[in-house]
Image 1 (cartoon, rainbow, N blue to C red):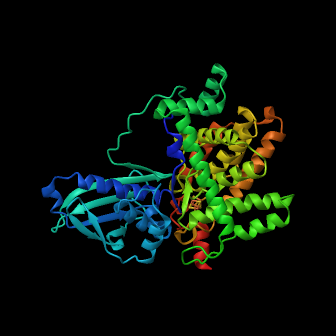
Image 2 (image 1 turned 180 degrees about the vertical axis):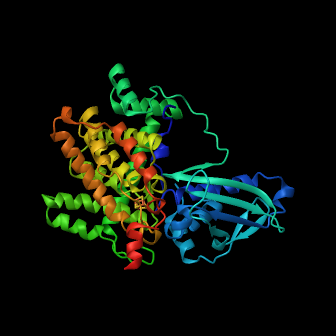
Length: 455
Ligand code: SF4
């Protein structure tokens, strides 16, 4: 099997919520299409009359609630996920009929949200989240066409995509088994291995990697801080109230002791997740839908357990290893394997981060991750109304609490008694996802999404 060559900064990306596959991937597609169009010969560009975009699979089923249209438009208007101000997206939402001028360097066409068509939910394209962009002339002839796939976690691919050249990892691995062999053979710690691989794959220096990790940590912390101090209702027709500030106040009343500590952990996860649901900036960890779990554990590590910056960085590197393994060997996309791939993976990564940052060595770190993922197996993705709110927000809180509990089990029970390794549970997750009906893969056609509609 090919070794893992994903960068830490492809897994953890900064961008607007509420769903990385429905916002970050589509925004990138919009920006990419503009780059392609601008590179067309002048005589072709001058023929351009309109841009038609068709969305398939879960993008079609839940794109409206997930803000996919405004994400695409902001990409077409030249915004990138890392730097798109939340007000831009908020304003696009308020004026869906607004006409936008797309500038193809000297040639302009008008575009509105209605040029984005929600097409078939079930289809034969290679990935559920498919988008077809077509630039048409007056007679409807296609001048340019690209078939994009938003494959989860904000990753974007397209028909004919070729992986960019990148360095060979110093310690090539594609499973936890081979990763373990490197650690033993080279007497190296997990965070050191991930760091060495990152340097080799991306060409970044250690200082550059740490600086980028610190930015991720800052954005995660900011999402929690903003979420625990912001009251009111979340956008969308559900009218869901934010819960994080109240939960945090109760934690404070309990002086963060006993159940107050658990309330704080819940509050932090709810906070970042509510910020995501509001369409504000989060870190995909590993996806936007699951963007509350790791920040919650990070906040607990820093504010309650006194972890140092270096320990947090090392914990994030350990968490990356888990995310890479799941992404490489199964999926982190709710549209492919259900929520076990999103909140389940986030919980496993957070459990690994917690154990590793607390100074536990590799075996306990793996066991923590395995336990957290094992107890998310079979978790479906059924967002009510296509909004990343119910069950997503509370599910992040549950994922954070499960991560903490997985850490407690792994650090309390004799490691030698642990029977299931991470590779096995990742395989089980993939098979469970394959057997899952498409109704439970971010289409809002089953489960809670349907029950709520019938209520
Ligand atoms: S149910 Fe889980 S996978 Fe589905 S949108 Fe919500 S957080 Fe993402």
